[in-house]
Every structure is written in C-alpha cells, then in structure tokens.
View (tube, rainbow, N blue to C red):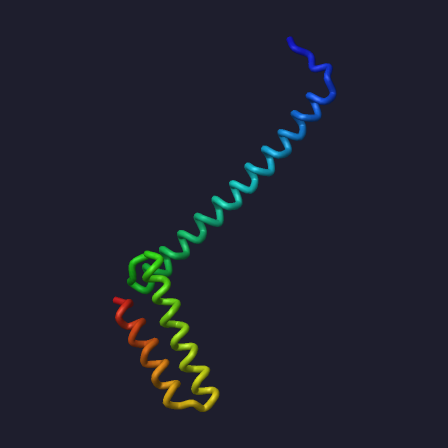
Length: 98
C-alpha cells in the first residue's frame, strides 16, 4: 500500500478534484440547457406546423418583428406604414404556418 507523504501531492490532488467537480457541474448545466432549448424549439415548431430549422424559426421571428413594427406605427399614427408592416408580417407568417 502506497502512503502519500508529500503535502504538495495531496494539495495538487485536492485542487484537481475541485477543478474536475466544477467542470462536471458546468457540463451538466449546459447539457440541461441544451436539452431544454431543443425541446422548446421542437414544441414551438410543432405547434406552428413548421420545420424546426434555424431558418424557419428566424423567419417566424422576422414576421413577428414586422407585426410589432406595424403596431408601433399605428400607435405613432402612421396608418399607411402600419398597414404595410402588418400585411408584410402576416404574409410572411401565413406562408410559413401550415
């Protein structure tokens, strides 16, 4: 049986164990976040009836942004710009959603 008599070897082993614990903990957290984001995107795309690709999700966000621009134009009393932004946003979303 090997008995460790060097205090620096013990200190190095303790420090290595601490670093390993931190790395394993962070890997677990990022794995959980990855699984949660994947499940969110799959549920979101399934509810809308679109593909779960990055491009489809980006177009949905763009369509919602266009609708936001339309609503904010109506609030600022720019009626024609509001109608144009709303129609563009609704057109984009209607082409994506099945």
